[in-house]
Length: 324
Image (tube, rainbow, N blue to C red; front, side, top):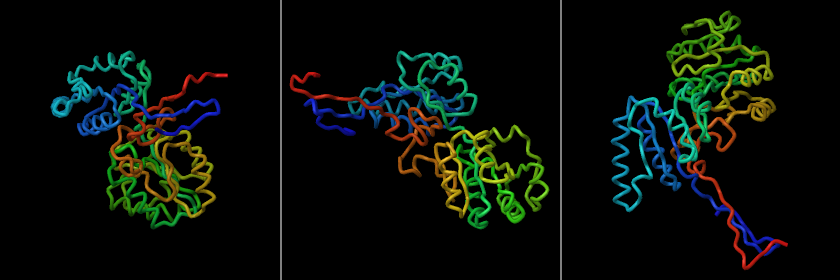
């Protein structure tokens, strides 16, 4: 039970958490998702239909067989966890139209997969996982801690959706900050993509190449980092609104007024003050395993743990109780 109470009418009302029903998950190339998603769905009382990528379809099928064997041994329905092990891509299009059988669809993969699901699915879709994440280095930022955060956000695991892709640097700190950034990024093997103003200032040993405008809207998923100079916090926030994916964005600052503005005005699933974007993760948030990171506002937002795989229903208890 979530909450409840006795109404003036004499009706005792409860709000109870219940499973969503049947969850469909389409994912690419990561067999660990099979175990993570199956475990979360079973824990929350949901059934799940899994469609992994062709690269790992045999591994996924073998894993599901083990799970089904364990379910049978425990007296639970084997069909609670199912996998589409045929790699034929046309089956994905069929799955997207199975709204009679599937209650929610979660795609985990690249932008193309998410676009396909949004446009073709007749099932409610939870989208996310596309992370054009930003860090804004404010004029008051302390350089050493800022560099530590940026290195972590870019290099710890660059292929993840919570990795920083664009660094926004306040023009008032650029002369002091960009040369030491170049030194640090050279040591970390990061290639810097700079706009014209940045390239004039960012002297140092790091590999530098001119920034292409389209790169501001895409994930690198590699040791590459856009560096853009901004005039002020308004410029930074507007840049994030234009190019961000509402995943994870951060500000590095000693000005708590600017920190508060950034938190309030950047409309992302996770917003950080003086911390790495890499924290956007179910395990790091204390949620345990996650099925995805949602960047939309309905039905879930951010890392999706157990609670995000449930909804609720209202239960009323009476004694011949009628509405007046």
